[in-house]
Amino acid sequence: MGGTSTTVLAALKIGGHVAFERLVRPMARQRDDVPCSPNAITAEWLTAVLCHQIPEAAVTRVEVVPASSGTHERHRLMLTYNEAGRQAGLPTSIFTKSLPSVVTRMIGGFNGTARVEGRFFTQLRPQLDIEAPIGYHAAFDRRTFASILLLEDLVATKSASFCDCRTSVTRPMAEGMVDLLASLHARFYGDRELTTRYRWLASYPRWFTVGAEKMSLEYYTRKALDAAAQVIPEKVLAQRDAIWPAAMGALAVHEREGQGLIHSDVHIGNWYRTATGRMGLCDWQCLSRGHWSRDVAYAIAAALTPDDRRKWEKDLLARYLDRFAELTNSRPDFDESFRHYRKQMVHALLMWTITLCHSPLLPNMQPEETTLMMIQRITTAMADLETL
Image (cartoon, rainbow, N blue to C red; front, side):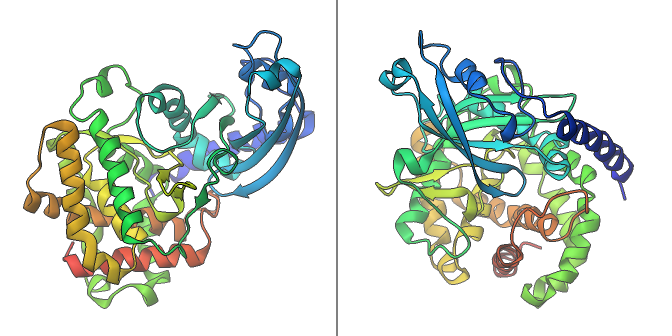
């Protein structure tokens, strides 16, 4: 399997760092420190990263509350400030993403996704007019692969409710999703700045091929097709040998057509809805430069039931193209766009085959119920649209 030796060596290196940290228990105190886990966060460090623009403000107490785990571990920090901090209105609840274990550092650190997400929030998020969390601080240690990301607590600030595979996505919600994607994709569409100023942002073909090698994606996709056979349409199973060539062929649009920012992991679990009804998008660790059809195909197939997708997908694509044209003064042809939409479904599938079957060195990224539902929805779309 390609990439296996490199992966094992990385796991051994990371394992040594994690073992050392658990023995020594280093604490983060200065602004440049990267906490190895949420338990290494101190009030002194938070003061340095959150209060540096507010004279005399200081964090006096921090409580760490576990939230969830997957590719990252997520915690909520409950903060108390001195009077200057309270008067400044600094956030009293913050959401954190970190990589305290070997398996989370393998998926988020070794693969570089945590570093990319941190740069998104510090460099690109301020330039986007979309509903997404605010980032307060991001840091990454290239030696140990530790990472920390401090984000807006959307429940506290916007009474947000997070979606999952059981969420019933209504037509207005789906329209809000494609509107957000159009705004995201349009912001840097065709802009050379993405390749000159933000050199750390990989093209989607590079992002995909490097990640596929590191995670032995082709091998584990074959295993996942066997494991999920009961939810995959027979039409797709009969063409299983065409899936990998189709994925490689579908990369061409990202090189040939105009590029912009793409989120790349727009499944339903990464969407939320604010109290005012706006749809928002979180978890930006798979960000890359690519063609917008990658996100649109994935979002529609993963968010909607097959029946709703069949009824709405062409209307949603037309809405997306209208919004995109308003923002870029460039209107893609509908028929050509629908061909791209059909072909990109295979890349949506490969986000979930590696979630179902993967190296034991990687974490379980999603519950099996969620994974099987996503595979079922996406392969059903592939069968309906004759993606293969």
